[in-house]
Amino acid sequence: MNGKQLFPLLVLGSVALYCSHPNRSAEFDALGLFVDSLAVEHRVPGVGFAVFDASGVLYEHVGGFKSQATLEPIDMNTAFEAASISKPVFAYVVFSLVRDGVLELDASLQTLVPEVPEVAYDPRFGTLTPRVLLTHLGGLPNWRSRINFDARSYSELFASDDTLRFVVDPGTEHRYSGEGYVLLQRIVEERTGKGLDELARERVFEPLGMARSSFLFDPGIRDNYSLGHDGEGHPDKWEIALPLASSTLHTTASDLARFGAHLASEILAGGGYSALGTPAVTIDEVDEVVRSWGPGLGVVTDGTRRYVYHGGNNVIFIADFIYGVEENLGYVLLTNSSNGQQMVEAVERRVFGRDVPR
Image (cartoon, rainbow, N blue to C red; front, side):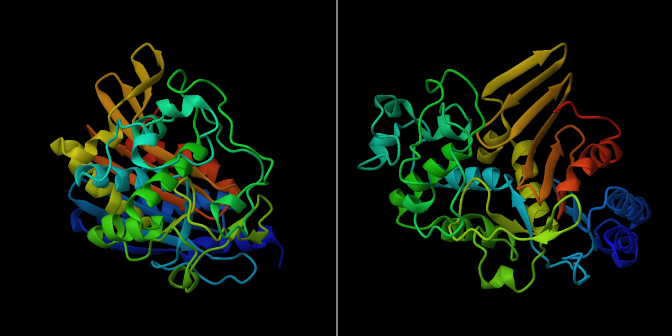
């Protein structure tokens, strides 16, 4: 059976898992079917989808298969790669450490650890702070060259002659940077004496009930995970041994929606973690639309409405996370295909009744 014949089976494998509002169950079920129909249209083998507001998770839905080769169905505990949605989760960890007095957001990195790795050779490193790195103002590239997936230490992640270099002076220009997040991760790990996954488990996953989340591709995730797929439906999985604050979060839509619901409650209440979605640097402004970045999340203000968001793209996994503050409504979309990007705008339009100018 070829790939085109397999995709239509997705709808038959879909499951509406949970709806906390019985009076809205028909509305949410229709939304789940819409997500499934998009997956079929765009040849995405499997999806995880959840809707949340500040009170909690409103609706959870999964559909399709972990692998187009095996047709093993996705269930509510199947973990996807969330790609760059790892970043706001790490930012939350950083803010929790600031709350506990372990870090200072505006302290120079050189005051937090004896030696700043990777960039200590350049005197500009003295201007780097956790806030600067979280808002992508560190002047660093997104990535250097190809990551060594088999690396067991940070020194092995890149070739020895592949030096991390500033692209622009820190603080002068917003440049999205995975390198900046990994650099801050190393500072945090050295400062606390704990690894990223341990910190995330203690400060995010366990408190919020995110039982199927990990920055590692560990035995718990390996028990039930989805493969990714290229545009032709060929399954694959990039196994990175090291946890990376930039991109290695494995999670489910419902777990990530729990994180979203907690963050939404913080935003509405003006709590300490609301800063993740508070504009810190303006990217551009056109008429009433202002695109900004906070220390963890992208921000779009369109007139009187504000949206906080983060996308995820690990090539064979595409993910989306967005919360409309005035609507008090958000969703998580996880897909196991490079074709998942073609679903994002349509889901956004269906949930919010409009295109969000991200």
